[in-house]
Length: 294
Image (cartoon, rainbow, N blue to C red; front, side, top):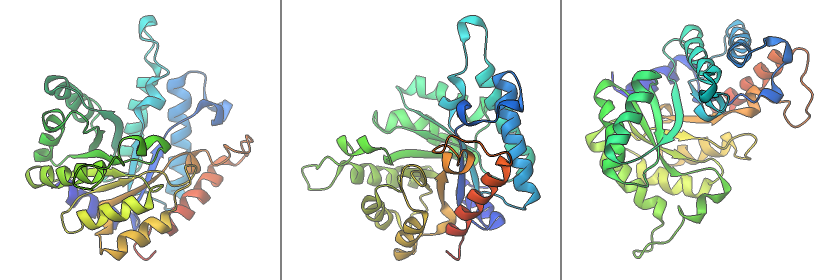
């Protein structure tokens, strides 16, 4: 099965296109869930996944951000509790929600041989269904990741990202009058012709640019990973509306929300006693905005 077919199938199974970002922040996790990092974080997600299952709620993808986990490693002291927590979390995703894509967000991209090593890390060592990579070093840098498309795996290339500094480079105007992100988009289409499952990361916070890229990508089977909804200010409703205008296959998109679902109490600083229910309510609201009928 191709990665695009896997996305379509998982979206239909879930009935939505929500990607649940797994970006654990220790300050926002209940303290009673363990003593070590590789106990606390997996226990937090196990409680959450159990509650979601009880309410028959299923996101259409998971996106663990590696940086939120491995920052807890202390390699020089033999402490890999962050990596262990990531491993346990991915296994929980597989256990509770089989047939749901796991996208490892680690934004790699290097010279070809180094990229081969990073691709092996993401796809074979972490068993991810898809990974995120940077296009900055060009085709020979991203090709080791794209080659895994033959195994039904996907690669999301940073295109027009959701962070405030994205316009520093991505919106630069080229000699032909187009923006740099548009040139990257054309390359993504070119690469997807050889490597089906090649996708793009396009932020919900840049809705005008999303509309431009959606027109460019429409009809090319380009999976879209769309971060920026929730705490970054993007709107899931605006994303769906923008993509529907160009008749984009919504089953190929994943609209990501992280802290707004797993730590919805972040702004107040008060973790509710029944925190699992608070997360369920946040995910249910996101699913309503990202259903096929939205």
